[in-house]
Length: 177
Image 1 (tube, rainbow, N blue to C red):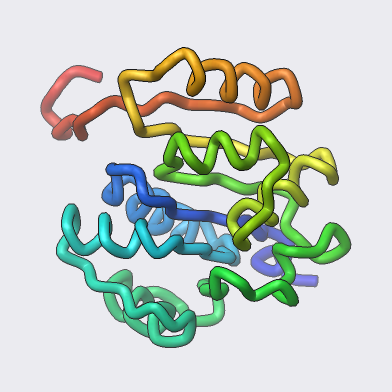
Image 2: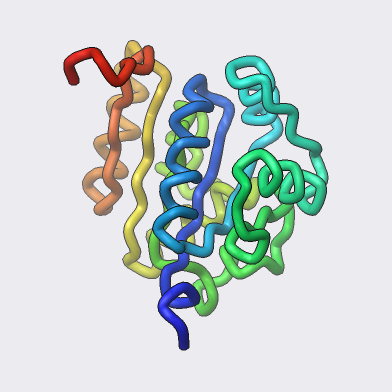
């Protein structure tokens, strides 16, 4: 097995603001020779178009072609899954990558994941990573947090999920971090 086939990760974009964070992470993963299983919510498509000017088609094949062209990457490295593609590798514990990042992650997605609701492929993939004791990182973007948001993130933290609260704006390379 080649090194590139060993490095697999699931990346999901939800409807929280912060599309540039998700796109930049996707670029970095592809540059690091990961095979990326990408899941995109309907709300994330709206945010992506609004914040980044990138209009992603709703069909997974068309979205994959658009992203491959936009990112100038190897098409075999990027697999876009449909939101109800229950037969995709990310939906099964025996085939899913053991790592997943949701970036950006909405508070609604945090709540669904915290309570085991798997109404779409993003939630199901997160559930699979958790049950298989993999690594799940949520880049939560909806600040300020309510008590309910914090309780859901605390619950997930107790289950081994890493919650990362991301700031409300991107820093330019010349600003202090």
